[in-house]
Structure formats: structure tokens, C-alpha cells
Length: 348
Ligand code: PEP
Ligand code: MN
Image 1 (cartoon, rainbow, N blue to C red):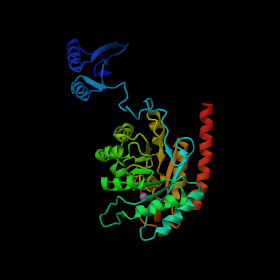
Image 2: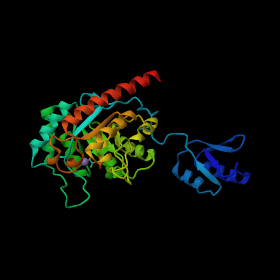
Image 3: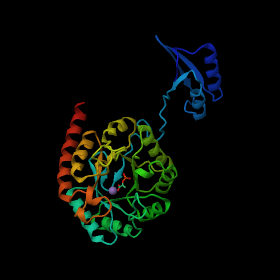
Image 4: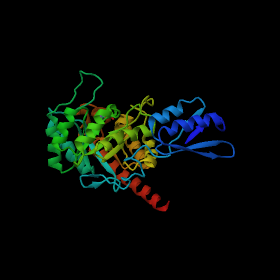
């Protein structure tokens, strides 16, 4: 739909527009309103070069596409009834709570294994554990390939699916080979399109889901869904969207909490939304409130850093991780909100 700056195009301007869209096998349908006239483009209206040429005309205000740009992730796409299964949980049918360490300490495997058992006992449906970590400083602990064995051992012992972040192809290959259940793409790589494509390709037709974090600088909702579209277009539609706070920060929090994006995402995509309150607020004492807010906004689940003894943790755990007891109480509160939300859906 082409919207001119003035109330209608002059005959010469209309002729120029018709001639440009004609080069792309499109036609113009003029729609005259009371106050202004708009021009529908009939044909493949998403042709980028055509759109840019129209937008380049100084008498054009906007070009709004009617068709969704998301062939796979759109709420009305062929995949609109697609369900993602993580272990025994079908995402969307019960709250998906993923919990565990920010970072696995390879020198202390038992700590992670004990936390894994404890989060299961608290009611988590999957275990998180960072094998590799994106760290601001190159001198900080970057993770360790050997931690993959510990992660897999946690799955073997608990029977729960496991989640870890990958940042490059080397890590991706190790994680796919190990059969990690959920691959996390972190905020720093959410716009790394080459990696997103590779993730889609290497996990296609495998029982591996992808948890795509929202980049800290990502503004438009569509930019987030487009990143997910890369993974689906690469071959794996099992993508879950994870708001985790943006920047600049809200004074006092680590990031700017963004769980309120959940309903906006859900209007446009069928993809489940799993919010990360831990990185959003960045302090254990605020995580419960952020979690309940996220569930009230309609999130399908949460990923929560949890540690059996946070002060012995590495990475974010000393400041962000909940104890398993706190997680247990939180999961019980989350279930209440889940019930209220579902009840309201039935009434509405
Ligand atoms: C994490 O989950 O530990 C992490 C580094 O997250 P993010 O990519 O959201 O910063
Ligand atoms: Mn972390």
C-alpha cells in the first residue's frame, strides 16, 4: 500500500509509480477515500528493490506491505499450529521453566550436578548450564569444551533436557553432536545472521529446539521475529523467543526489563515466548517479580539462573541466581498466574 505525502498523487506522479511497479509485474489499484487517496500494489509487493525505489520518490510518505514478511514464523503461516516439545513438555500447554547455572564450573562438576537435581526437585522442566560464555573481558573465564560432559551427565542423571549457549560453529558442532536439547543463541549473537542460518541448517530434522535471546539493542518486534525466521528458513522451525532486557539500562537493573514485549510478539508470531528475568533485572532479589510480570504478560515459560549455593558460583550466579528453595516457591506462584491467564482466555 503506497501512501503519498499529499492527499493524492498528481497524474504524472501516478504514471511514474505505475511504471516502476510495472517493471516488477505489479499493478496499482487506486483507492479513493474521503480525505486521501491510497494506492494498493497488486502482485509481489515485497520486492525489496521495487519498495526502495518507491520510497526514494520524494512525494511518497510510506509503503506498508499487507502480506507478512515472515513466511514461517508468522502467526498465520503454515506453521501456525506447530508445537515445540522439550523433553516431556509441550511448550504452551504448561509453563516451561528452564533453570540452572549461568556457567558450569568445570573444576567443580558436582556443584552443577547437585543444582541439576535440585532444580528438578523444585519443578523445573529443563536444565540450563553455560558450557561457553560470552564475556565482556577476554581475560574472564570463557567456558570450557570439557563442561559439555558435565551437562550431558546432568541430563543422564536427571532425565531432564538441557540447554546451553553456542556462539560459533565449533561450539555448535559439539553441542549438536552431544545432542543438547535446547541451543541458546545469546543476546550478542541474535543478529549474527550467518550463525543463525548455520544453526537452522545443522539442527534441521533433529530433536533440538533453539532459544533465541532478544539482542540488547533490538528495537522493532519485527527485527526479533526476522532473526527467528533465519533459523526456521535454515531448516529448524522449533524456535522460542526470549526477551532478556534491553539497553540502555533502567537505573538499578542490569538491563531494561522487556517482558512487556510478550503480547506484541504473540500478536505476530506463533513462536512461544520464554522470558529471561535473570539477565533482565540482574539481581536475584528482583527475579521473582520480573518472573511473575512475564507470566502475567502471557509468557509460555521462563529461563531462570538457579544455583544450589550462588556464592560459590561463577559467571552471573553469585549476583543473579536463585536458590532452589526460591525457585520452588516461584514455580508454585507461576502456576497460579498460569491458571488465571488460561481462565481469562476461556472467558474472553
Ligand atoms: C546467559 O544466558 O547466561 C547469557 C549470557 O545471556 P544473554 O545472551 O541474554 O546475555
Ligand atoms: Mn548468565
